[in-house]
Length: 264
Image (cartoon, rainbow, N blue to C red; front, side, top):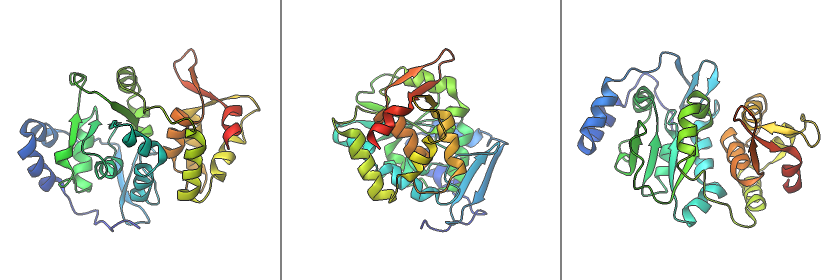
């Protein structure tokens, strides 16, 4: 269970003071930014703050810290580290996943188009010990000199900034390729860490045989079920591990239902 957080407390001053020593210009930009008016931060049962915007969850409503730690220890991230990739997170949310990854990588890039979101995260979580290893990217200008950088999407942020995500997805590796037995290894890992894969089978059961499954639709379905397989883990599995993708006329990514059932 995560550390209990006082929602009336703020880490903003401490975070900005630390960032000022590293990047005074960025610290000024964040300090001057406005927090999104639609952001609603409430206490999760774990005691940690969790975020919704326009009714959309940006983190687990039960235990956002544990969700981020599960992502950071997942087989996909371990494969990324083994191959020497560094993560470029698209979308910060409150920063749980960025902080969890920063504990395991020397450097983490955080692509966040809205500096107000960084300010919101700085208010609610303590980034001080991680800031020296984080590079915040606010616009499209900083694209040079990024070898072996893998784009790691935060699904709610992708839905908030689809055009920006497409831009970065065209320029960065969308996660490093999995090993030969990646799907089975990943599922075995999830069975061990989450103690169940029933949730994924349940989610797929409502689709027609040999039908196409939209990843946004599948991610949305995770919010209506209980279980330990998180939306982020399902998203990662679908994007990289379980199925070849194609795009329909509108540019949305789809996957064949029968493909994942081969590896369940």
